[in-house]
Image 1 (tube, rainbow, N blue to C red):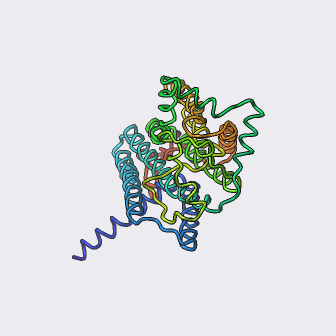
Image 2 (image 1 turned 135 degrees about the vertical axis):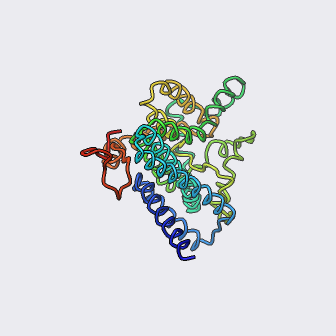
Image 3 (image 1 turned 60 degrees about the vertical axis):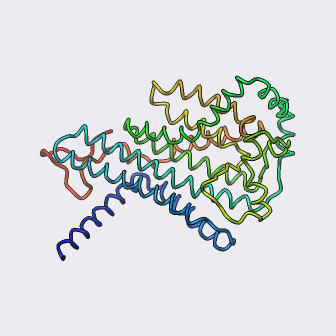
Length: 346
């Protein structure tokens, strides 16, 4: 009985150590997620809002599963290195990095969307009239463009497809970067996504807009219904915040636009994917007015947010440690052979 208990304790310690290693790959990103989680929890409690326990369990379970996969892949990588399989060890550690990045992104997506909902409840005055006036100064007529797109079926289909790819691109890009060993690019990608989302929330909170679909009373399927939480949150009627039916309630700046630019930036080092990604995401940017109900001002704002996030990612020194891959356990000294280092350039 005692030996079994000791085995359980050793397993638990090893699991905790692996979890620390996985989280340490992106310490800044996990720290930000932790801070937002605390803010969400306090705001929900004192504001009288409620999150469904079902959603918490589903999202929490998914996060634990992905982190577990990252930890197991890292442990496999360490074992392979100990047996002299350096190439296979690298691949396992790259899988761990990809899973860890996806976990960080998934965690932030859930708590970030709740944070954006809570910010909508502050109910600042709408700025739609100013955005429309800005569009008019540039000669942009949203209603005219919307009618033109819907009168050309093929154009509508292409734009709708490009707009819908945001979710699978968000997941596919970290997988591709992780498996190819682009560790620094992967960290910068997640950093840019999180930073651009925060910038968008902090801009849209004091300067909210209901969006063109609602403002121009567009009732086609997938238009005003896609932002149906906006008015209930502002009025205080909606008190239950659901993860399952997430809606993008940020109009200005456009996050679809910002993410499209970041997707292109993230994939820049993979030659075979760069051109298809650039074409797809340029079309996504073009689709945001009619498919997302964004004004032209929103699109311009999204471009600026993306460029700011990318500029900061290139200037900060948060990712230098990712240029080296640790192939052996942190606690162990290097060394399959004398003088051989456990850290090698990626």
